[in-house]
Image (cartoon, chains in turn purple, orange):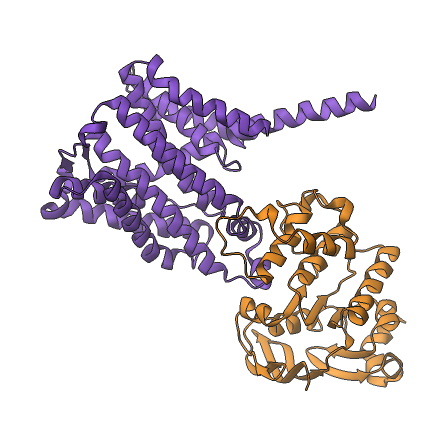
Length: 313
Length: 247
C-alpha cells in the first residue's frame, strides 16, 4: 500500500510540475513522458520476455508517421490518429514479429534490427508519400492543446493511461507467462504453452504502445523525420532501461527521466553528449547492474534485513 | 485400451542409435520404471514421447490417438506431463508462482490480460504446495531452494498440468536417502490415490525394486528385458548388462 501511496504522490507532483518550471523544461517533461512510454513498451520485450529488440524504433517511427501523415493530409481528430498509430505499429509488429520470435538471443536482436533498418530505408526513400529524408513538416496539434502546458497534460493523461494498462498486463496471467518464457522457455512448452504464439502476441502489444508513443511525438515537435526509425533511436529505450533497471515496471521511466533530463541539460553547454551518456552507461553497468531501481531495491532490502536482525538481538 | 503405445520407435544421433526399435505399452493406472545404465537412452525415450525430439521412425499413441512428432505444448495439453532429471524450473519466480504458472496454463487462463494473476488459482496452488511438502517455501525465489526442494518443485509443476500420464526422469537424482523415500512414497500415493499413470526412469536399483510394479531394462537404446522386479532380477541378460555392473 505504501508503494501505491508513493505513486499517488508522484502523480500529484507531475500535475503541479508545469506550474513551477519554465517552458523549456515543460518541453523536456513531455519528451520524458513520450520516451518513457516508448521505453516501457520496449521493456515488455526485454525485461518481461527476456529478448533484446534492437529495432523497436520501427514501431515508434511507424506510429509517428501514421499520426503525422493523417494530420498533414487529412483532418482526422488527433485521438483517432493515435489509435491508427497503435494499429499500424501493431500490424507492422505482427509481420516482423512473425519471423523474429523464431529466434532468441543475439539472432533475435539482429533480426529485429534488420527489419527496423528496412523500414528506415523505405521511409527515407519514399519521397512522394513520407517526404523522404526531408521528413514531414506542419504537424500542428489541435487548438485545445496547442500550448505546451496543455500538450503536457494531454500527454500525461495518455501516457499514464497506457502505463496503467501495461502494468495490469504485466501482473496478469499473460504477464506471468512472459516471465515464465523468459526464465525457461522449454519448461513453458511442457506445461502446454505455445511459446512462439505468446511471444508474438507480446511483441505486437509492445509494438502498439511504441506506436502510441511515436504518435504523440509528431504533434509535439510539429515535424517528424525518418531518423525516428533509425537504429540510434532503437538504442534510446535500451539505454533508458539499462539505466533505470529492467526488472521493475517503472525502471524504464526512471531511465527516461535521467536520460532525457541529462540530454537537455548537457547539450545546453557541450556537444559531447555521446561521451556523457557513454560514461553514464559504463558507470551503471559496472557499479549498479540492476539500474537505479535495482540499487534502490537492494538498499531497501539491506535496511529491512538490518531491522530484522535488530529485532532478533 | 493402452494409455500409451509405442511401436518400432527409432532415433539416432549421428552414428549413435539412441532408441532402437522400441516397442512399449502402458495400461491406465500403472506405476512402472525404466532402468538402464547412464547412456542407455532413457532420457532420449522421454524426449521422444513428449515431443522434444522428432522421431526417425515409429509411432507413438496416447489413448489411441497418434501423437508422433506433435509439438511439446500440444502433447502437454492432451494430459501428458513430465518432470526433468535436472530440475527445470523458473528460477526467478517464487515457488508459489512456479506452480501457479502450470495451473494457469492447464486452466487455459494464460491469455487473460486483465485479471491480476495473484487472485487466480489460489486454492489449487496451495494444494499442490502441500502435497509436495513445499508450503513453507512458497514465497522463496525458486532458484534459491535446495536441490531436493527444486526436484519437488519440478514434480509440483508437472502435477500442475493435471496429467493423466506422468513421466518422471530420475525423480530422486541428487536427493538424500530420506528425501528419496519421501519422494518415492509421494509418487506411489499419486499413483494410487489420484489414479495417475506414472512412468519413471531410475538408475538406483533400490528405488526401482521398492516401488515399480513393472520394470523395463533399456540397454544401448534397446529393450532387453521386461517384467516384474523379481523377474527382471532373475533375467540373465539383464544381469549381465546392468545388474552385473553393480555387483
